[in-house]
Image (cartoon, rainbow, N blue to C red):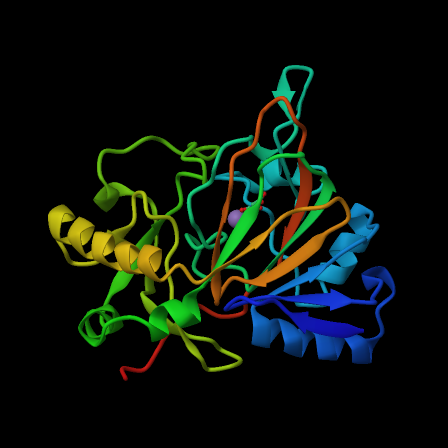
Length: 288
Ligand code: OGA
Ligand code: MN
């Protein structure tokens, strides 16, 4: 097994490994590389849903895929509740998965729950020839490059992460539209977090739309969020994954945000995603 860092602020390729057959000591090495590089890519894998689940569960207990607001009864009827299908393919008039062919906004997976997943794993079964790349943004570096004054303000902020909309702005199952970000359902998290394992601080954002800064007017909240997101755009600390069939990417949701580019709807894209349950809430970074 060889870990080869990308020429980017984040990410590494892991070469010479069949992840369906990985040993415990190899996994330990890989886990350390994942903490260090934030995103790992494995090429040329051949994984069934069960193999993807088994490998994902080595990072921790699995979290349910995002199903919107569902009752326990409805959840019990979902055939594979831990594995999300991300696809633009339509069968019998029904999309077989989420996120269609559109560009997604920058986001952290499921940051609208109290204990958002630690890891997400995305596996490519079919990929388009054009577009559909996934960019990852290093939130450690984004924070390190933040002007002191903005960083000092962020240290005190709690941001609400909207639960109602997915990354293409579509309402999730069981959710109703609302007027302003203040009314969005969701939970607050600190804007600056410390990684529970590496202790490194990072900026923590979910989706920009319907985000809301606690104890502010909507105007103040929007102004602060614009400033923060302008800084993210300015620093642009990214690595972009150009998918090939058989690629598996695992990222640390506490360290990166990600965004998917659009692709022509005349092409097919089929991915499976799993996510690993956190055992604690994001913790605020101690003021610098
Ligand atoms: C996701 C996601 C991006 C992609 O599954 O969480 O953001 O490239 N997917 O499909
Ligand atoms: Mn995502």
